[in-house]
Image (cartoon, rainbow, N blue to C red; front, side, top):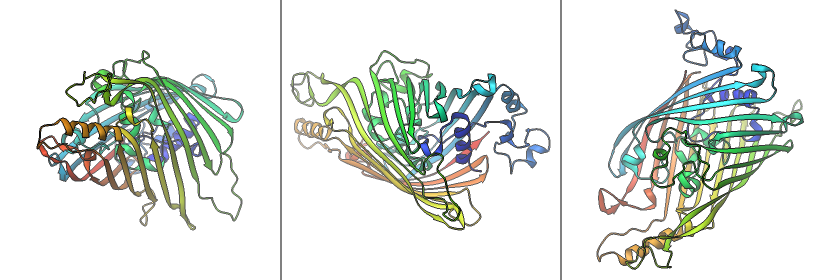
Length: 487
């Protein structure tokens, strides 16, 4: 069983989030929460059994010297995962070189039914320890950053929430507390196999929402409601703090370095997402028909009620680049975006159902170019499961991402070129595109290796190289490897 299958089993049993509901993951790799001590195998981490069981236990440290068994008696589950990466660019960028970065995730959950007989409830607390350097900042200067685990070095609270199922057949559930929105909204299940950040939390909210939005490694207080009126359809509604930080100036991760500020003094960020899945929850498969080629389709929108600065004009109507400008951007109330996501299996081998090919696509845009850096983004790709003989848990994928800078930002840069000294270099931003080829090699149930290649066209959408101000940042070839270890 590979890491992602373990996560699906944990999610379905512990959180009641059916696969067909479109549940997925964001940029950081998924971490499984064992729903019982039986998932740990016989590995106790003691004596010869430790080495003997490494090939068949789902977790490197098995029962954690008996800790998982003790927690299970209390209705609690613990998961720890270390993700380590070494990535570098051998062409283009501001300069060339390699960086190491890493992320330790820890998740503790309490199942209320196992703990004290209350059906359908889960308490969740998770923490992050981010270490190493940031290649995208150090070398690449891209809009669509190379790795989903990159962030400021810190040890921080990530999520703290309570989840409760209700109505007959568990047709509704609610989640209340500190949440990372990228865990449930705008998610493509197949895109989660890739490493580039923007296969998780898209470029539009990353750059247009205050503080980048409540997404890894940040979160915000809020309420999320899911309702399944008919089996194929889920309606997801969430209302969260308008920003993951109390002060939107500066680096949001530094403004909330421990993850414990719980901001509520901002506006509101609302999400609405409609999800359609085939086959539906509880759908029947009849003898001789074979399993259908499943798919999940989503449409949604978000609205943030905070104030947003104009990208081009000041409060007096002058161009911000003009010497006559007062330097205070015009303020706009509110911002919104609409999006669509599709995941579809397109082929499955008749005598080996595990071998299959799926495709995905996601688009998102905002018509309010006057207050947004990015006005359109797109991701698409193909994922091939079980690609090689005797490698049933491996996955290979190829995908791409595209981000378009808003026309008002481009107009502001043309203003800057107009007022700049004669002969100076003033590039105008347009769009940035990357492609990624990745392979997940399941070496052990608890150990996954993922070599990865990315190529970025027009990095930063055509910005000047800060180290060579008379040239644009050149196209980048990025290579590296990620390691996931479940403890």
